[in-house]
Length: 401
Image (cartoon, rainbow, N blue to C red; front, side, top):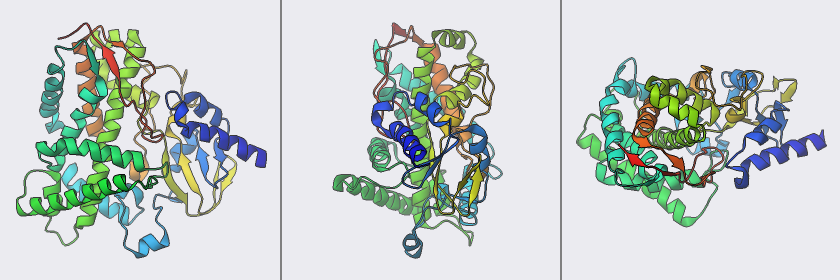
């Protein structure tokens, strides 16, 4: 058993190693041979589709990784890191202002504004023969969307990218702040202070945005300011960073599959299943590392002991050959389900918005960039093994229509 633990740990360590960020999929395939892989630090990596799918709905798996000291201090993480009943309450209070049943048309009503944003961003590239899809398009688009939703002044949007970079780059695979660089920690505190001031401003002068709605809620059961801050940070990362990676990963994948790119230009409606296949094939969220067992849990013949950390390897499960035919092929006709928006009580409530953003963004890129080609392949990647995507994606074009 000791030899197996060391062997499997080495595979997962190689997944985490930045040297393999450009193509972790052979390593995920190797790890998948042991559906539940015990690690030397006491954690367990689950990498097969059916096991991940069952565990993400298993009440014996907790998302609350707080220590007893953190609980006693009143530390309140975002809903993503909470269990019922705290999770259910927080999600209900946020969804009250974000979607159905109170605002069922919120996302679809954004379609004209999202289309305008994308059109303007691509128009601004018209005189260039080489474009950085990340810096010049995939970053500014979703940050503008999330800032509009939250009620952030447009003049402050550039600061949000700096804060996002700090947030993502300081987190370890368990989602904890691991980088104690004083400059980065000061940046985090600056961001929190900014949000606290924004909440106070919107409470005095509310608008049609999400922060105003949460801050001026008059019901007895409402979000505290600390919860509004944590929700805003969650939306910034989950609603922005993952969409940046989805757009960049999607364009990279299309450019690597020229027959798919040609077909999408000829059949624009295929962008909808194409985005779903990108979510399966190159998921922005490679793994969910913040789970622990509340009891002994048997999975695929392995007993995961109570209190152990469990890492759900979504990227591995999305290419499980027991579920998908030709799992390593990019096939926009596949029509298969994927794990990329998680599931159960933690199913991504921003999924409809992420899908719409990616469909509009990638649809216009495909339509308007003539003869696009990759300048560098593979492109440079962001450090995070959890939120995986290119840091830059340089694309040459003959013309932008």
